[in-house]
Amino acid sequence: MSVSAESLIADIPAFAAHARPATLLRPTAGTPGAGDSSVGGPPLWPADEPWPVCPAPHLKEVREKLTDEERDTWQRIDRAVKERSRQNPGQGYVLTEEEARIQDEIMAGASMLDLTNWERSRTVQDTSGPGVPMVPVLQLYARDVPGDHWPAGADVLQVLWCPNDHSDLPGQPYYWGPTVELRYRSSSMVETVLDPPRPDRADKSYLPHPCTVAPTEVVDLPDSDELPEDLYDEGDRWAEERDIEFHRVLACLPGWKVGGWPSWHLTDLHVIDCSCGARMRVFLTMDSGGDPDIVVGRFGELRVFTCPVDASHPIRLNIQ
Image (cartoon, rainbow, N blue to C red; front, side, top):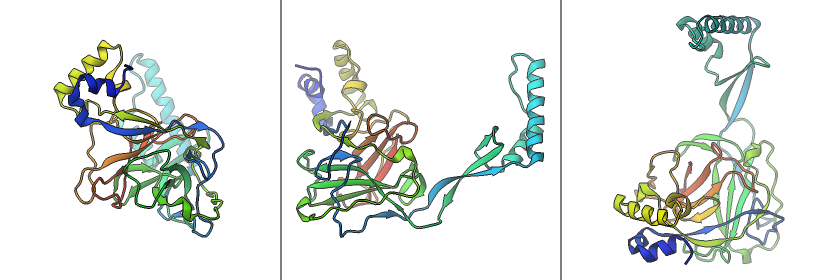
């Protein structure tokens, strides 16, 4: 028997209570059509249905040129710091309190200073102009991704996002990234297909390259932060005996994924609760890199959480 979550469960049945079904999507560069499951492919969108736009404020970079006096002052401080470092080898670059205060005044709350163009930059909320057209990120047909998450009469799931960063979204604390929408529909109700508009402003890292998918059904297990300690230790020993690592091969399987368990590899476990009080489950994981060539967070995963009690409740987003 191959080394898998199923073989672990066969040997240690207590893991069965923690197993979740998942579908690995395995996107590969291609030319999908509207009738295909895809990442970044054309969606099966009715020609008479308006294309959604993102009305939320977007984050944008604003750059400001330093005055000649500010530039000269910054250079003078830089020379003084380097001279002190030369005279005191091993001390490194150290600012005096006065120098630090002056630099803070020059930065004026900006987050970065471009020493080539002598421009400071800051990120601000941009509320100008019309809403930005959403971008089709993922389309799945029920025939390819079976499960109990499909609403009655629906056989197509479409995931769209705004290809710009947002912060302080309603119901999304501590989140910085694209807004996300889920749309379900019946393919039999679509007669003519819309060619989606292209956004006039977008972060290229949020524009996925078209990919076909090769869905594979698997069993996913949680990592140590969501398992009883003694059970995790038993599973870890089982994995070591087979020369694999539990958390890499059996738990929180990486990549584009429907269902399964979320990884908390950058932070401690963060319980995400619905507005109704139910603990939410990860429904979809969208990964950086690979053929879709998107980047979320610090080359991480964007996860969509849904309510297990009522799927119509608002989704929650998390980037890990």
